[in-house]
Image 1 (cartoon, helix red, strand yellow):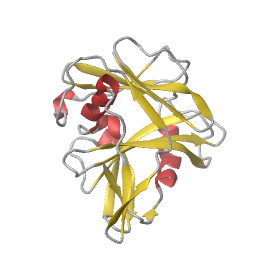
Image 2: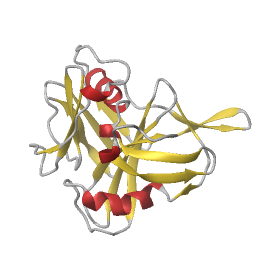
Image 3: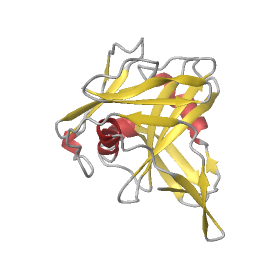
Length: 217
């Protein structure tokens, strides 16, 4: 489960993405335009230290973009190339935000979703000492490949990322590797066939046909 806080963020996550997104090779949309949220899903860090959230957003009238993020209470060594920015959280204090594809906590969690249909974390708030569940904004479906899923954070040496081309429409992908598993995160997700090696699809209100979010290569 993912514990959420009713808190104010300055800047907001979407405001943070406005200047960051246009610098990505896979960006599509109007540079500087308002970034709007389409849907989102979370994974649960077993250590409970790192927030792991994937936002599906649009910049202006552009296509849907997939932006996995991690939220940390301190800088991540060696991850300057994946740094998105700083936010001030009214409950947790300063948070360092990273492109999750460069954070070693993320690839094993994605691998579990892609290869073993581990699903998304349930989200809840603590309200007067009781849990108040937050309805999911989208559905996720992974494959059940029977392939062993790497566990625990990837070491810095086993995580690599970079933009490459993909056959899924015209969207770029970012590739991250953990153990012997190579994962492709589709940055501009569209409906596409799930590879036999395993994939993760998602849908949300207004997008009834599932889109391909990530797959094993």
